[in-house]
Length: 501
Image (cartoon, rainbow, N blue to C red):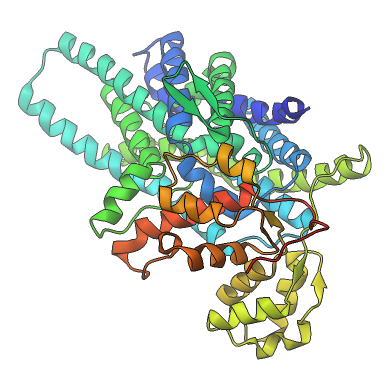
């Protein structure tokens, strides 16, 4: 049954391969420097590697935007995004799969009554502007750098042709890897919270966790999309917007690849943080926007006279309409799937500002006087509670989000079997595992209760002061806590509940 629901994710992966993944080699194929079949093989191999090895980074931010909590809902969200992208692909427009999945998730949030995390949404939307601009800047800088180097070297025409082909293959492979690492979150991200596979050992060489198995399946779907339907979009990107020379095509692919890598690399993020530098948000960005930005950058470097603004206008229209169309289609489809086919597309999440929650909020320096009218009331979704908090006029948006997180009722049972089978000894330290084992058999009604119990029993679960030096350490603790919340979550309160001390 799980694989039936995963078909929409495979459809979305196919659509991404037909549209976004094509952009990696679009300029190379459009300039006739690389054959389509060669480009498709290279793109397919490296997009799968990127998805499995580096796909976790951007998935976390997308999950914060809206956590789809029922597999039927995940099916609809992925299907609506896939259908939107496939339709735009049929119109030969290189639209954004990232925008489609974001629109679809927001559509689910509206249907489920779940408040959209505005911070995550702002972060993602800002990259829709930053991505093409940054790609254009890279293309401009690389264009002038390449031109200066080539003028000095005076390479023979035949040798230049050979070097360019080799360069297009190398940067295309890099771009495909970066695309898989960055955009697999769009394909399988909504299934990560609701689908669980046992850890897969691959010939004793390495193992794949549940998320990586999903990413591998999604990578295969992307590869299929590249082979079966990507040529049309490659033609539009490679020659429809601006006629490119082979060297310019190389610069476009390299610029796009760098942008995708910047927004997906956990290793780069760790390096920046460890050196006290500002980190780049790990979010799924649009390869379509990156490649179009790079093509425009080349056009500007050449005076801007050859840019086909009518084609650019059509592409921009696709970018605006994609999230809107995906959101509306998701909302309507969820209604039909729930009421006609009797499928549970979302699970009810309740919120209650109980006495323990009030005490916890006070420890976070939140004035709980304004919350007294809502004490012990039960809210059936986060939007209703958020609306009530806004009526107080004294609760800020950041405080409202903290109150929502604290008051969410989420039962957790620390099952001994799961401690032994699902907690990776290579990821969790021995001290961290011992602290979890000490809570074996206990249950909790809120995420923060488990967090406090762990932090009370062991220093290794405590956050350090919030500064640049400790940012990477605190992020690791937060990631591991979220994994525990997901692993030990149970649907209902146990009949014989042992209260955590």
